[in-house]
Image 1 (cartoon, helix red, strand yellow):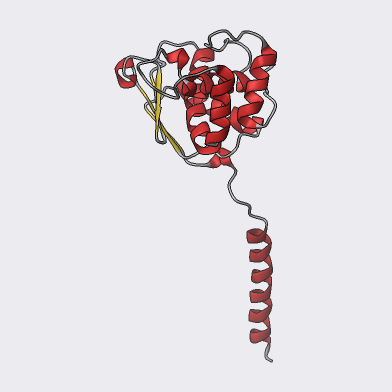
Image 2 (cartoon, rainbow, N blue to C red):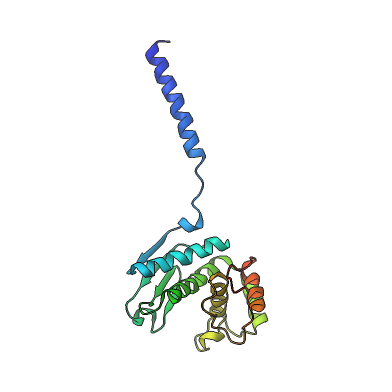
Length: 194
């Protein structure tokens, strides 16, 4: 074997070793790096969304589906409300909200997405039985009386920093909130209020 052939083979061998080392050490992207597209956000709103998605990761609530988040300057984009979630799309109308409220609303709408992707029907039925809830998402019922909103508020409480109390009827004690959070997630809340 001549010197040129030997040099090419050595170079090929070294290249294969380096490629194997690089590719072999790659892992699938964590949930935090799943596609999250944000449209129309101010810098403060982007920080709130980033903070919210990181709270899910910190809490071990992986499995967030791909999301597109749209921010609006008026509540018309949210049907007169503050936020909406539907099938991978979040609409937020938090232009006048303080940073803690922007983060809370991002957590809340993401909770709908996370629940849809990760909580099975049996757990949701158990939750509704425990809470005495008659409907999952019948809009003829008050917002606080719907299962989907109570679940989102409890998950939001479990991930938040304790600055904003959940909007839930008849629940004020952290022990009950923590028990419901565990029922939904199988994990302990990371909220300091817990």
